[in-house]
Figure (tube, rainbow, N blue to C red):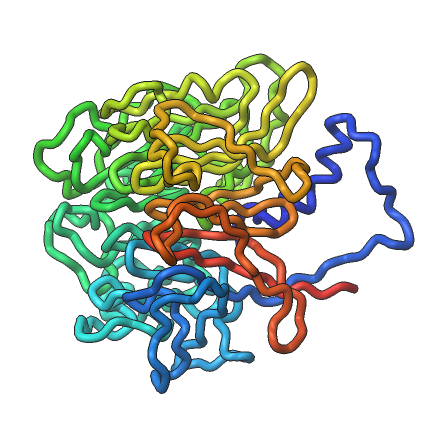
Length: 494
């Protein structure tokens, strides 16, 4: 079964019903003008700087790779081994961007990778000679049943649920709860018990496997660290981290010390279920839910709440004052990116008090030294949806070159033309910018531009249709060091 959660498109479609539930009187009645949308294949488009080939714009090796996109959002090329219509990658489930790579999970054909040769070796059978400028299927030698068990290879597209790209390593999560890793392992971030790099995928040593048969439910990767959320035997969740512990980024109560070569369990101050985990360069965040929410839209992937991942019907939302979300952060805080009001590091997960009391975190993403969230806020019986809040590195968080760093979350005046309120759906952070997907299917880049290094607030020109005149709509976004990947779905009206 496909246990994927609702996409950003689902959230936009649900907006009218949600507004009615919140007391809106201008609900459109269903009638003759109502239409049904049929979703076809999903395609990957990229924007930003692509010096390693991570934009994936080269079709068959006969052209030079596009290092920069000149501000254009363009389709990733089809792999030379299997051409697609219009020369685009089709049927993408989810994307993730790292420091120098882009990885897309397809629904039927496995994982497509492009970018720096060292990180994308699986696409070229372990060769580290050339950057992968044309997206290629990951078919390395470490994908067989002997390595990770039956039906969990990356060539088995239907088994792949999520991908998370770090600076120089990549994690994969299968629907069976198995975590796989490849790339740099200098700090033990691949979690296999060694510090040896792997140019083919290898299974993470999973201490949770004996305790939780359902295994892992979501993953994240940072500069030199990794994280995973697992289901435990009691029906709750546990957080595991591994890799480099500089700045206390692993959340284990210590700072520095030896690298953790295998996943270590993190002690959480909250007993509520973890619905998402995110990694920046040297800080992490975990989102907990106090009353069985069904989805959190993270950077490039919608993550199921634990009960839904098990196929259970979610419990009705609680009406007590303790219902809602908690966002916990830890690690490097030199720019205020932890959001606790101080410019200091923390080595244990700590809840951001300013995001309590009626503020529900809908989406969260972490950059190199800033943090961005989408909040739904309830105050005085009124619910305000889709507010953008950012903190940390000033220029990266605000798109203003003279902006001071902020150690507290601050509301970002994210408005449309004419000062009309905008509703954010999802955020995805690169190193020094935030890409924001809104209810109108527009993507705005705020922060330091990957194109010219200047402060920016730029609305990307996202294609509304492909060459065959098929309508396109944004499903999700992800961001890496200096680039963005957008998953666009074909929409047909019936």
